Amino acid sequence: MAQSEQEILAGLADIVNEETGLDTDSVQLDKAFTEDLDIDSLSMMTIVVNAEDKFGVKIPDDEVKNLVTVGDAVKFIGANQS
Amino acid sequence: MPSARPSLSPGVTPRHSRILGVGGYRPRRVVPNSEVIEAIDSSDEWIQERSGIKSRRWASEDETIIAMSAAAARDAMAMAGITPDQLGTVLVATVTWMYNTPAAAPVLAAELGATNAAAFDISAACAGYCHGIAIASDLVKGGTSDYVLVVGVERLSDFTDPTDRGTAFIFGDGAGAAIVGPSETPGIGPTVWGADGTRWDAIQQREPWTEVVSAGKEKPAIVMQGQAVFRWAVWSMAPVAQQAIDAAGITIGDLDAFIPHQANMRIIDSMIKTLKLPEGIPVARDIAETANTSAASIPLATERMLREGQAPHGGLALQIGFGAGLSYAAQVVVLP
Image 1 (cartoon, rainbow over the protein chains, first blue to last red):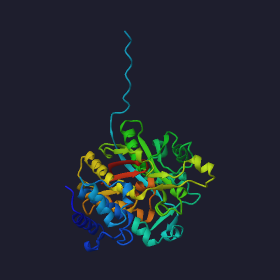
Image 2: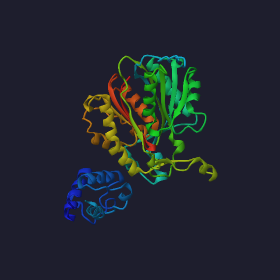
Image 3: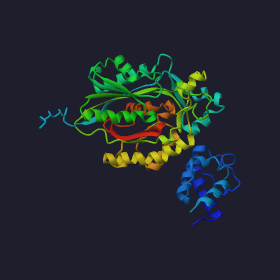
Image 4: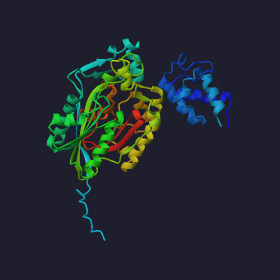
């Protein structure tokens, strides 16, 4: 069942926290993974794989570059959850 | 009625195989991160954060594919207690030998005086050494050869674009070697291997030789899609490593060493986590001072772990090679 935007954001914040140690409160929709949260490309891939497991979505390699902000990721996950 | 045909000799009775000796050659010239950062507008810190690499070795002119291979092979033969004339096969895994023909292996065999050996190269990139161990093990078990030399050797500095931020700091040069021979007990577990050619462009020589020539380029370069390779290496290869453990009939806690291809420290760390490798099992981290030497990385790391006492002689090591192809091979071996 599809989750709400807030549920996805909270789940994603936990994943980011686990990978980077960043406070979950800092993971906001308007934050850019690279520019604002200082997450590098390999950590980003770990977050993507963990998000796939957690939310039951497929995030192809080619799609990862389009996930610039946390909001982009939340939107993609919401739209692709079955 | 046709007359009965004679039956073929079975050769030898099926027997076991094991690695009897390893050796390594590291080029003289140490290249710290400070030497590569300017061309990619980077920093030592940036490189270490993304790869765990502090320095690498780059081969000088006289440290050729053959010279490095011969040095590593002589050490491996000394450890195994055999002489070159006992070698039945010489296998060289490399992607940086500059001749399409002949292969490097016959030239190496001649250099070593391995006059009784068949010799050919293996092109499986970073998985080349583990492919070589698989082939060598079967050659010994099937009786084709008593002793097989397996060399992984690269001069990746010849194929590196110093301005490519994705690879300029990753690659290094060197050679590692192993001797595989007969054994009374199983010393090389079943190999789990494969390839996915649909993803041939994830790691590739950027331009085919025809283009290098027609465009008047000095040399080609190896490039890769770092993020995609990272995902594949960690989350697709950890299950392959587990399959090799299962195929060997042991559990992960039985391992005395984990020796993955030295691709990137971040891949190694994530693989350990995904594989749930118990704490306390020594892990090869030769990449910090050697960088990624493709086919040479596993035998170089093995030689180092044994020399420095990080892994015990006779211990069980899981080794896994993975890279361009996308090719991979994994097996559990008894360390010499």
